Image 1: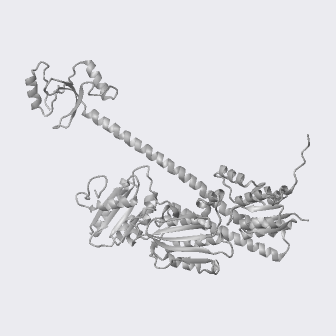
Image 2: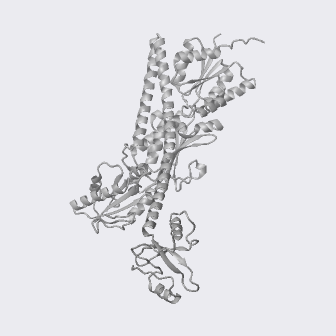
Length: 487
Length: 137
């Protein structure tokens, strides 16, 4: 913009002409300095810009953007009667405005980081409490067989009778076995917690698992009564892990059931997540990669009297479930389901609910679990979708990501889906896919999406699928925004 | 006549081993496998000491202890009967909660599993020791 300096004594007509001609009604002194009415006015303008003065309008100031250059000017505003106000440029504040925007952005980013840090700290506090409670539970579970073992050894030392000695030796061996089983449970739980327990997914008939466990001679004849096991849909899960959960559920109930009473197992296909009366939080159904076609429910009830305030408190949480079922709770979560304790006046029940998912969605459960484990306090994690074209098998592409449990191939959709910790990992996935695609001449489409505030895996997956673009076109294709298939 | 101890625990090995240990040092022992059975047994057996597990099916030990105290207050059980809670439930991470439960149950003693056998026998003996007479005036 050229230097235009309308003198103060211009007539209104001339001034109006100049204002009409200019792209914006400004007067610019040029490179040799800014035009100010006086030093005091300059100081007021500086204060206003620094946010320490009054409102710009109160000072007779205005910010005006030149629509041609896009630059921003601080101007004085002088009313000229009926015509447009006379604007006099005080300063080009484009840079300062950018600085303020940048400061505001940084302030917002800091606020977001502080919020994320606060959230992470709160999460850590919850984890710490859960860890302390879990350690207490594990210690509690270990103490009983340890005490029995100690007693047996003390008795062995005291008794001269070989027959009694053999009995106490058997007692000692039995409790060593119980301790070993607890150690196995602890190991399994630890593996689950650190994500090292690989689950092999296949269709699982929960009714058959329950029937097998109920028929086990160890349960005792007539001690387990099963109802509602017909025409249940299969769930997709790890057969061995789910068999263990069902066994632990029934075994735990049998331990709490006096002789002469039976454990009741009720199976059902539920269309919806439970009502509040069912004891599970109705608003917090477990997340699943797709929309489940209902839930298969296994309710294992034992006739326990747990009413009353103190009894109710004691029956809460993992204390009521035991270590084996704490493992079951994690296994259920890994299957997109849940396991919880429910109390009634006449019985106590443990409820296992697993989603009925299509095969393609079920294959994504481990990715969802990996997504859950990704940190949320730094760069937001992302879901990456790579779709091989021409009906090719995505399994070989999956191998490009090694043993990373955050990636899974879904032959039904021709996709490899990954949960990755941030934009850098998205780029690495893109490069790996590009190399793989080039080496095999197999075109790939890629889409990705960052976590939203709720970190909903299903929503991020849907957005990543919606953003699928061919790799290698225009640097990888995509929408160039914060999510997409951009290369 | 021997002093009588009622051992209440749902774990058969613990029940049996405790009974053998107590019998070995001269106590008469009765057993119960859950909270309800304990409430029935205590009225019939009128033990001097109840060794009471906490985490049991059909009524936990805290509630059983409280009901026994109520029975004592109603004159259904002798005042001299002592209750020792024997528990694996040591809430180190939540001592206030533990204290709350113990106030609710009002036991004479609490023994935590795993315990030293001699320590447990000593706790039983201590519970049965009459308090020293207090000087008058």
